[in-house]
Amino acid sequence: MPTLWKPDSILDTLNHLSQNSKVGEIILIDNDPNNGIPLPEIPKIIHIKESENTFVNPAWNKGVEIAKYDKILLLNDDVISDWSILDLIYDSITEDVGIIGPAASCWRDQEENVSPYLQETQHMVNCYGCVMFFHKKSYTKIPEGLKVHYGDNWIFENSGKPNFMLYGWRFSGESEQTSGLSMFNEIKHQDSINYSKLK
Image (tube, rainbow, N blue to C red):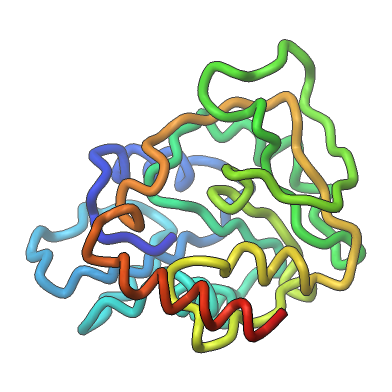
């Protein structure tokens, strides 16, 4: 989880994840060098304090690289859920599967009244990159020219395996609470140019 500490819900999310038996470690990439607030003692957290903002895609690369477990969750810091989904989806995260992300119906109050299930997909939806599950062997490192945007597209398109959409789960949060800040507009514009060259 990369963070600049904008959402108020971060500590609650970290505590909930830490209490889940399926979570072995939580790699928190702290991209705010000016945040002097000490992080409370939360089990399983590996706190990576960066000296400057490395941006989300490089933080994802670093987190996956140093993770000591094969089953990975890349998570936006503004996502709120009860995280029971981890127990249900855990066995589906294998090296034969690409990326697993949420369907649009999972976002806020659009959830269908059905039990969670997976369906193969050829396309991403807007909220897909907020929560992505995968095996470490299904991850392709994001190119250096992409800092904020298109990292999820790159991971999805380069998994080399069937990707899946998760239905029957609910989460909420403030979409792009950090990446939507105007200070990142120029970087996101350059990301768009660089991504078009990679296609």
